[in-house]
Length: 293
Image 1: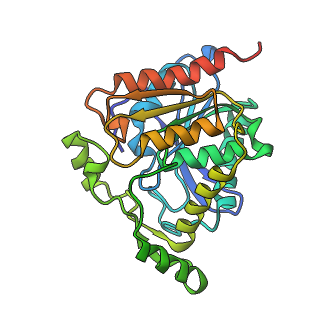
Image 2 (image 1 turned 60 degrees about the vertical axis):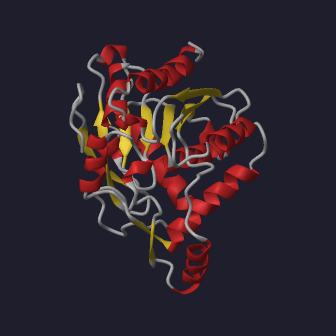
């Protein structure tokens, strides 16, 4: 985990509704009397909360408590590595994190959702659920994996389909092994190469659930995302198709604020990520400023 932060996070344990034990990093603002609406931060398919220290810290400096939760089977989680049973389970896991923030710690009823890369489409799918949408003040999608340039091969897709019948927990390589896809910053490429918690393989069930996320977003009714939505894109992205992603997000959220920044895919890893951090905190702050008193 990167550790250059002003607000040192506190590790918390989070029990999901089926009993799976995961963890999260909690960033608390310095001035509790000036606290803004909390943020639940959702990481990508290979990543974990330790990749996003600078953006979580920036949100905390802006007054937002931040819970950066590790997805089941990812990060430091060794149990059921790379596995999730279904989209429903993944969405329910995210709701467990939202509930933890709202009810157990801060006593609030709504959160900002920030989803990075693959986490962007999970956060969007959560917001499409009518039971959960009212819990979200704003949705910010950072280089979301809605329309990727990089995908598994057709041969792998057929192998995944076959495995679903007989070996649903069979592991397959995630096609993001090249660290140059994520960043142009050589120091951060070295960090990724050495990261023992980076998820390199996922099960057939998880990969099918990921595909089902794509289907849910593509089939959702136009204009379905009614909450303030921001889309932050990286101009030098090698993983995401920016034009197609913007079109897909605008179909769901016609009033979405779109900002394209001079960065590679993982904007936290830029040598100087100031523009990204400013855009991220503005997305949450501006949405909150329009809340009824």
